[in-house]
Image (cartoon, rainbow, N blue to C red; front, side, top):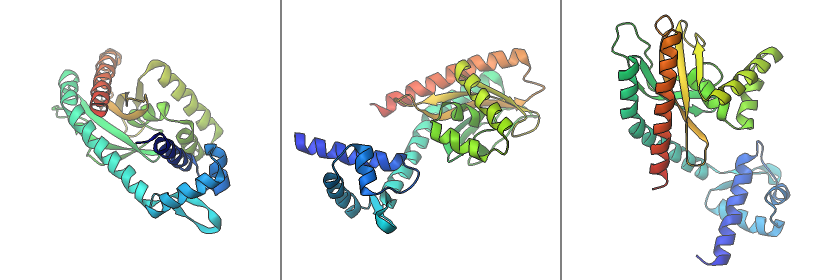
Length: 250
């Protein structure tokens, strides 16, 4: 690719990043200002992107990402989930073997998290969760650990859903604590009498992509058991992160 071609591609990508970060449709002048690109260049690149379904023009010259790029994003998410499943499952089997409790792999979906893999404990009394189950992003260890490392935009969306200022302050304080310690412990926040202990999984850019969780009856996961599980789950999450990074950058 020529130098001019590389510069053109970079500008087109800058436009897509601007549109992706915007919460509402933007005009050509707003895109030009945010991307630091001349309006004439933005207009020309938008025509090409529109012809390929990457962006769409709404009423009154407002521009958004098009369905084509959203389809690509969904495909990428599905591929990432499959990669994570393949990478995480053998490690999760070892987690469940070591702790004798259920292990869970979850990813964010909007302001919720979705279970994409789980390894159930062999005990008669155990925590069970089906793949595809949605959980709150701000309640329960699987969601909170992801939220703690998410960007401000996602955190703000969650905070707007809370009814009181006290709830908002408490959640902000909890997220700060989670980031400092690198793991999350919750009791009875989603399922009563269930203790969840989670650690984050990161990609090569250092962004959180999933959570790894051990969950079981709270009467069985006492303080001593929690210390052991924290060590197991944080080490396992680090292993998954490293393998995921190696796969993505191969």
